Image 1 (cartoon, each protein chain N blue to C red):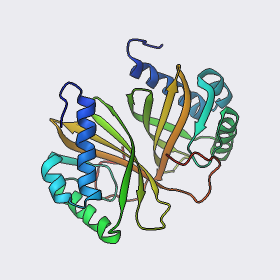
Image 2: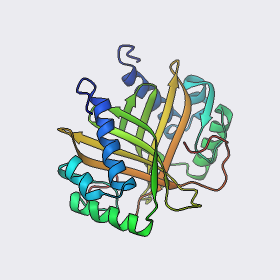
Image 3: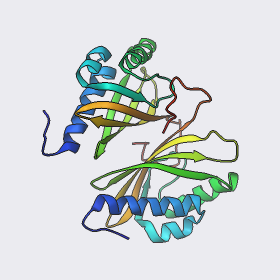
Length: 131
Length: 131
């Protein structure tokens, strides 16, 4: 439910719903139809612009890792941007990756995306985890 | 200058000053003294907690890459968190890395840090760059 008095909260909910539906529930077509704007400017170097390319990208990724799961750890929203910090686990036994995404919202639809991904190393100099 | 009527803007300025002083101007001791809190909880797996460990980490990194430069592309602030999206270039000819950091602020000091780093690939499926 969108709280129009708090655009940051509404944008976070929009992004959470889109991300969860596409990647965790593996329904990228439905996610694109419900939440993507009339264009989708992609900065992940592995994917082209647009909703069709997003669907193909997700299908390729979830085809390789059918049990993959993004665990959302925190959201930060300001203006038209929403940042998501997630733990991606691709398959059982995977230490996983630390992921940060930024989504830009226009007219309550997602229209642009940036991300950075890093493998979680086996050992660390602190006991805090990457999250 | 801190604008106390806009904590997000003040927090962004604090983080920008800290980051620029430590990594671009290579003065981590001064950055820690001016901007770090009474503790510093580190989630980068390559560094331990605390200001001394931060100084040692930066000294190691800038020792290996004396000309390294973070170019800040966008800041996103909400509550006590500030996200920074940067292009890191380590040396001439380096395509560089895409970096996202999150800093947590307490009493106008930086007390916690998470980051994710990724090498920028040579080719991409879109023409938008990672920024």
